[in-house]
Length: 179
Image (cartoon, rainbow, N blue to C red; front, side, top):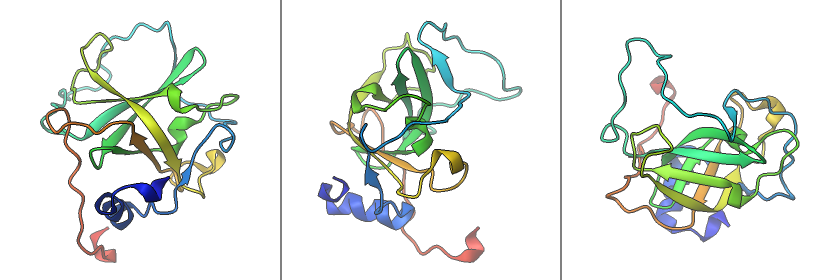
């Protein structure tokens, strides 16, 4: 459960992201109907870098040491998402990553990769198993764009600081003139 985590982690999460109302997800509680996603690929796909971004340059892990990749399996297909490490055991992402029509998301179908700037599955990367995932209670796949589309992944083991470091979370007061 979300409320069994360390108080310091919970305070940071609640203060910055208002995630205290997240619900634990399970196959029985999550109905995966209707998501059509552009990041769904067949398991036999050939993963190669391509040049769709013009004038850009590859990001270095030193610039974004908290960024990670999520792979969610739906049968023979996979969804790829990103997430941000916010403590040594928690990653914030989108709830929509756990949905695909006709499939229920099992915890064993989710993998989180951290500590690499290589966008390749041949690379020697560190992947982490998921202990639990949570989603906002107001999340609906039909209205997922910009509304309550926030999820939290609890990892099975802590991420060492030499692999990835959590994002620095703003703890000051948020005012209307900041937006």
